[in-house]
Image (cartoon, rainbow, N blue to C red; front, top):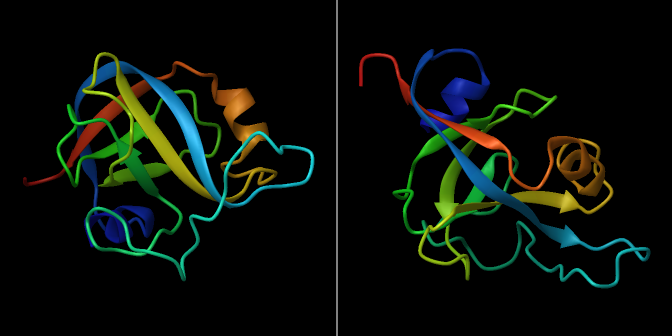
Length: 132
C-alpha cells in the first residue's frame, strides 16, 4: 500500500540511509537472446515471500533489509521506487543484494538494458514515508 501511494505521488518520503548493493533482476519472460537467465516469475504464478503477486516495484532483498523496506536506486534513470516484498538465495546481506522484478529481460524500464545503465553495484537510498 505504501509503495502504491509513493508511486502515485500521494505520499512523500524522507531518505534514511544510503548503501551500496548488488543489483540483479528476476523476470517472468526470458527473451531468446538471454538463454542463461531463468524466467517464470509471473503475476499468475506463486506469490512472493510477503504473499503478494509480483508486479512493478517489487524486489527480492537480502535478509539485512527488513521485509517491506522501501528504497530507490540513485543511478536509476526511471526514478523508480521499490519495496522488499520477496526473498531469494541472495545471501545474508554482506553485501546487501536486491533483485528487482521485471516482466521481460528486454524491458527498458527494468530489464537488462536498464540493468546495464544502472550498473551491478548501485547505491540504494532507503526511504521512509513522511510522518513515519
